[in-house]
Image 1 (cartoon, rainbow, N blue to C red):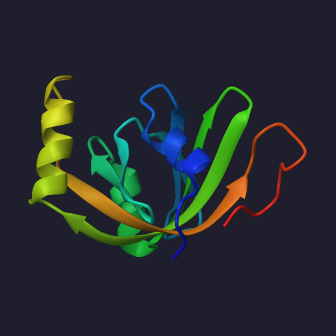
Image 2 (tube, one colour):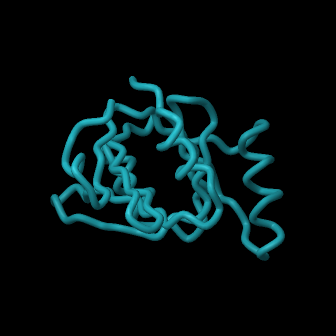
Length: 132
């Protein structure tokens, strides 16, 4: 488990940052979704609301490893993550539900991920280097 440094955390929590979540099916087929409901729950964990995530949820049940990419402008990071659990109640679930309720979306569950590695994927001299 690694802590997200400030520049990474800033992109993870910023509402205008682009965010995608990639998983792999049981038959090794990649699947990528746009992930607007992503939030940091601590410096080393990320929560993602399960809303219309049918294939993604199935993939996570078969393979807990995933990758999240966040970017805005020339700054980008890839976070290798592992799903720890899927929750259907509690403070994080309630916060996600309230947030998405304003957009008329219902949260089926919330996936909690631990951050394993972070890589710089931006445009610059550090592109491709391991951050944490």
